[in-house]
Image (cartoon, rainbow, N blue to C red; front, side):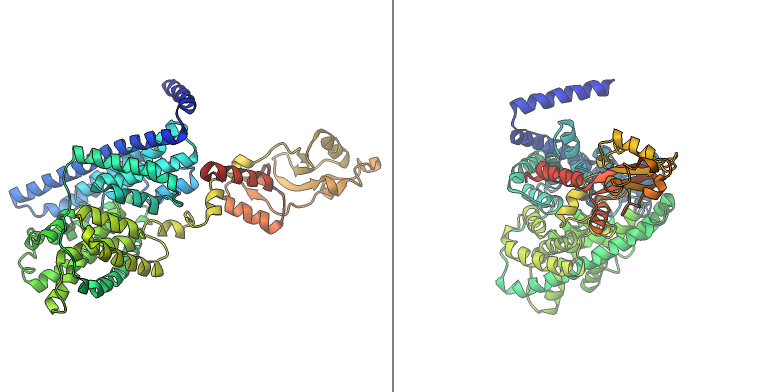
Length: 592
């Protein structure tokens, strides 16, 4: 009853705002609201995760209990699995790729539970040491806010899609306090087709989220870079870009294969225990794998190298320069596998933060190797920042996002040219070997995602069930021509499905095929419907996708095809109805 009353209030408000507030203005207001709520969610996520991490590290420091690095990741994965299995019935949905699927196939409807479930699950995962980033969960959360706000105000698909992008932009902006990178991320990754009018609402949401985050949660997670870079380092940037591209391929393949190895096992609690034990063991041996790891990147920037292995049993072993370089390389590769273990064990997080982490360590290692061999003199701080951009660009296939994100969070606009060189090269190398990003590859291989096929994107938003016409007069298979003539006299259609008492379809009768015999009354009782019917050129199943439906229409050159559900006749679908719905969707979404 309360929901019905609330729905009526929203309907009245929707009618009022259509009369008094223009659509463009209202979308901007809605984007402002999305920016606020997403930023509050991001701050809540950051603060909670960091407080849990601070508590764990305090306990380790006070009691010299390094074994907690082994226990907490396992506990976090188990808690997250319990939450997902008990409170979400096993349905959580992880990753930014699912937001794209919601836009492309679900009429821009992101599930309501993602407004809270992503935060809860990622807090339990990363707060207790899961080796993953918070960016994917907050992007999904912001997208869910955008979708639900769009639904609440009765917005169309185009407007809801824009609000989803606003939520994604606000999430990135609030996490890093970088509004420009948030806007570019939304346009480059979330929106399949960016348009100029989309800039303003996304910019409003991103800027709003940044301001709110700055007010509530002050602090810059990374080192500010102000030094100029020598032009003689350009060949080194080119080499680093190539290395970043190859490393990106390693990250994408390792992450997806390792994750799938565990996710295909339908035993969530066993997965949590196995992955938790392995992840806990790695974290115990290499404490920098704990959580997001952004604090470790900051230590690299500041030159506090000894801190990275302060609580490791190998702390004495990695004391020399060469051994420390070996440690950095090990962490660079192991972080990706640790993230896969985190997700495979039922946790929630993403590769965005891991890409920044491994990229920073790779850039540092590359710089140290160059300096130690005497080939050139490099500034490690520059290569840490550039490595972050390069690997992020290759892993998520978003070079512009990588360039502006690193420029904003490090203040390294002086590095703009090196950032462009490395990000572009990494993107092209990664794209050559992996056509899809870490977000989209799994979905693309399963046939759920096809960003570059506009026709298929629109078609898949059409549900076959919504196009079924059931006003075709049925004729029983045991009937005669006389019975058929009576049915024809009551029908306005020229196709007649032949069915039995259980509504199983046996064939169809076309009016054009029987015109010559339908007036021969002497055959009314002697001619059976069985003798007149033909088989349809194809049949459609109610659960088929529109891609499969259109293929059958093309292959048969038919204009109408019957639809079955569990082998029972349900009606007909016409090609003209599909074209009409397709055209209406184009008008609604793109104004075409």
